[in-house]
Image (cartoon, rainbow over all chains, first blue to last red; front, side, top):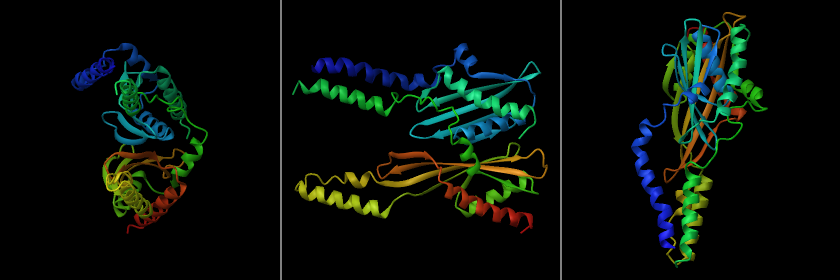
Length: 136
Length: 190
């Protein structure tokens, strides 16, 4: 029984140790994830896009940790029984539209579920629609 | 003794699971809930005949009055983040836990004098707040201000006891009352 318990626990302990450094650079190579996390909008107005992103994050219950117009990035945190940290960046694409990329972590794990990003962009789409059509 | 091991191992794994990765992302984490519009109203107030820079400056003064440190200001986007650490102890809860610890200590004839109850009561809270200004399009000199507030409460042992977004309407009303006064002072150049 003792052995059985150790067989279960030992790999767990070892993997926990090994992942300390791996966590610094793991992830980051998956094109599919990048696609899931990105949506393009037909505008070149970075400021309005960033303001829409900030409003969307506030609507979703986030507090904005950092916002930078020049670097076109917004970081925010949502605290409930869980914690979500999210970073949204805006980049110009082909000189004619903006690509908005969002990536988030749920507690200690990266969120890779496509539905979560679909939900986020569905809310942002509405805010962007109002922004693009100059309605408040 | 041996037969207790698998049970313990399972309990240990379950504890690791609960504490770390096994909590799953709630389905509605990125969806607007039914109260989103109501919440937005509570967290937002509009100010007339003022630009967003003046609002930001009035807000900073109010936050400083309330003991907040300004962590971040981005004028271009009208975003201001501030935080403060405050006491979270509740005298009643503290008294109760000390009494419970004392009773446990006496009942166990001194063996259970661990002070567990006291170490689990709330100790300090880290409050974080974001204020976002947004100029209103139709009226060039109107600005809407929205604030969102969160806090993490730590217990006496330094563990997270609670983390939450503040939804109490009274908190927002109190904040905006102070901000309105500061905006008035700002407009009057005082």
